[in-house]
Image (cartoon, rainbow, N blue to C red; front, side, top):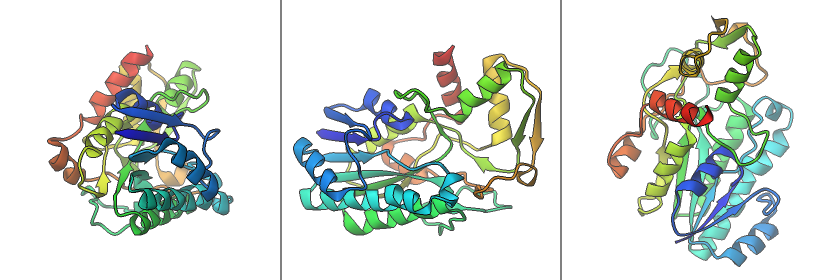
Length: 283
């Protein structure tokens, strides 16, 4: 299988390169601009992929509140351009999306499935949901994969993540405040890449949730990071109201991944397991 990875320098793109088999072509932003249909056509036609994996995104969540057009270009119309090329070329498109499409589900305690109605509450989330819809409309051979709390190794310097940020702040002796009323699932990019690699060897096209197993608050995530890193910073749990941000974050976005796990034969590892493996390779 000939596979093109778009967004190859990011955390998921880097992990995909490590686990995919076949003829894999990793493409960075410098090599393909997905917001330009003519460049999408030129670059993809040169590679002739059987499968295109779109791991590129505008993910500056707060900045998107002011840069609505920029976010839409990358997260909405970029995927449309890829979907149109894949449709005319007979290729499969894997489009990576986000738990943020579920917005605020305060008080919820049951994981969200693919059949639950999305309700985006920020510009970033809306741009990603619209991208999903265009992929679905334009390309029948598609996998839309929503994930959550992603972290991993990136081949481009400067692409940080929550784990590295927490460790750095703790090592600098900073007093930390972390929200304890936003529920998610921390997900190791290597595990999500492994799930995608198995997914694309099927023809069970559609929408899938893909995260590590279990759920956590960001505060619980941070405390586990410090425990595994043998760090003991001053850390205080706070509410979202005490830590205001420009874009509204999901109050509850733990995803139900049973559709995926039924297809690939079992759940992904627990989020604590993924985190332990990631931190072990950092130390």
